[in-house]
Length: 79
Image (cartoon, rainbow, N blue to C red; front, side, top):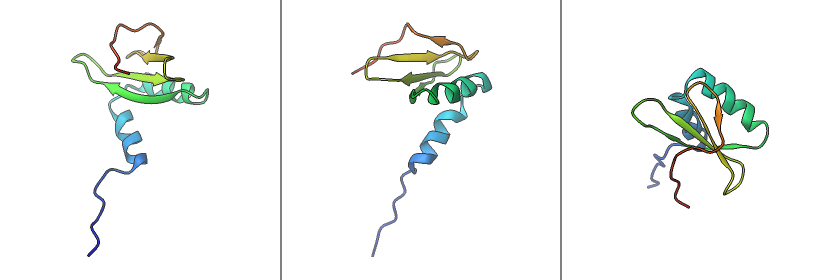
């Protein structure tokens, strides 16, 4: 008997990550993805979500609630 894979498919994870973002964040994310940036994860602090995008392993930005980019965010990342 075959078991059914219950994990969320990759496209579902991408959609779930974007669900909590503001419209301005989603617009900026789409613009950045056209230039090769990828959404790594979304931080969920108490105030509002922060989208973290990576171009390379060391080059990252944070998309703030208003859709602006923060090149030097005050967040700690584990590598």
